[in-house]
Length: 372
Image 1 (cartoon, rainbow, N blue to C red):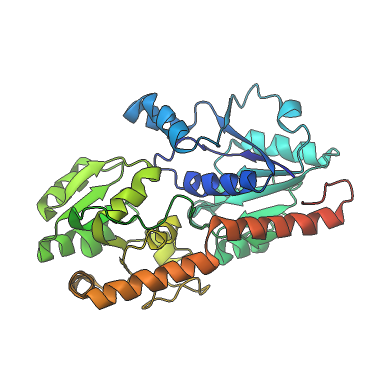
Image 2: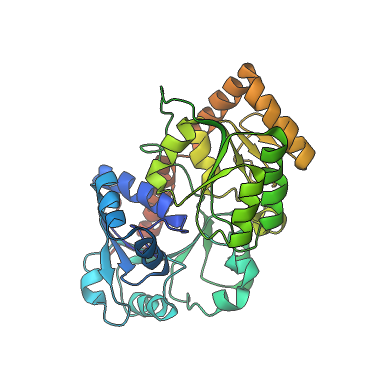
């Protein structure tokens, strides 16, 4: 099949978690013999910030890390959609694209386009900014790929798009895997961005204060940390290491003994069942994980078996103390977390789901090429 993705960015993961998943999906599709083209705006927000932070070397590092992946830069005002859509069977459009481009692609589909057109939502804006989401013209789209059941239900309830399917994120296990033999450099590593004020209190309670109380040797990676956040990191005793390209995260996980998950407030309070991709990636690397509260309403994992859950700061300190001092507990968490990822939550599983969906859509339209 011929897939065309309109992404926010494939190259840049600077404060852009969807790039992690997109890379794994594209890699898996290409490895299976499908033809894939990825388009990203030449002046996209994430790419622009990556270049400001790291320069052109960051793009070279992406190409070195992902030699089989490539994207086409475009200007939304001048893109040649005839060329971009030529021969396409399935077109997948991420929700961080320009409203006008999304509408134009819909008109192409409505005016006889032989491809199937899917909208991909991997954010909380259906809940946090519904007016912005309502502005998207999805009337001609064949449906929505939502990364959680609660988001898919919002699309159905609001009548945004014809239908919606759940398509969770997953780990790119070609990249995220246990790396044996690395020297241990500390107790705890956290890879994540500050979160635009959406979890600043929670990061204090479940990450920084436990680091300080337990006197852990900790390293924090991420971007968009304001001055007061950096001051809080310094007071906790953690070392702030700045931006970490996502392809280097497995090395970071391999050099520390534990990590934590602190979801943004929307995911812990209003959008249950969505762990975000960091949980998949950490478990795939075999690092014990302790999470602040979130409701696994879709039974993606086995809380308490694949990872531990802490209800408050005191319990987080207790859980981390147990993980760091109990080798049997550590090994059990590692083994069970890996088992769950490998059996259910790899990008290969998600491509299977996508191909199955494409087959069902193809059967509705004989002009659409059947999936190989």
